[in-house]
Image (tube, rainbow, N blue to C red; front, side, top):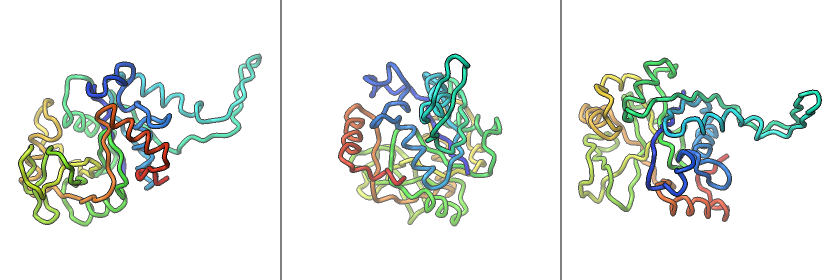
Length: 257
């Protein structure tokens, strides 16, 4: 099963970092958060990635293009124009980088990678570029397969109000914004989707949380995998410093590899 990562947005709340590089390349202890997210998936043996790009897309392409070199011990014989690799520490990942342009919202980008045949299976995983978690990916996939629905998202309970999910056990019957309900959950990405979700996509101006996901929920085709352990977004510079401090102090719940 492939993993689609949405890495396309210009995020102004982290502008201290993203004026020079795209947000997915903001680092936690010398490694981009994109790398941390990919390590979470690859730890569970999901190593085929499709990454949707836009803002400063060339930065991400060049980072992957040089990944082998930067993660190997090498000797350069300049006179003979030769390179000898002594120790290769690169991951065994397959990474497809797709420029999904600047004039479309989330759902249309998902539709593009499906329509352009970058997704090879009937189902795929999906997440954003800006959060880490200790969610068990294998259990998430099994939960999705056992329920035979079009979509499964990872649900968490935050302290603040955001896009809320109303549940009948694990089935989501409503997906709406900022309603007061102490027992409500929010979408923490780490999703599993069937390619048939494209039938809910009718235009290029649909953010992920809007019309399609609401309709999927109203059709009882959306499930919630409840995650009660660690999750952390990197929306602000403070979030980034918090994650960095966790790494320095060997307190990294998302690091299972």
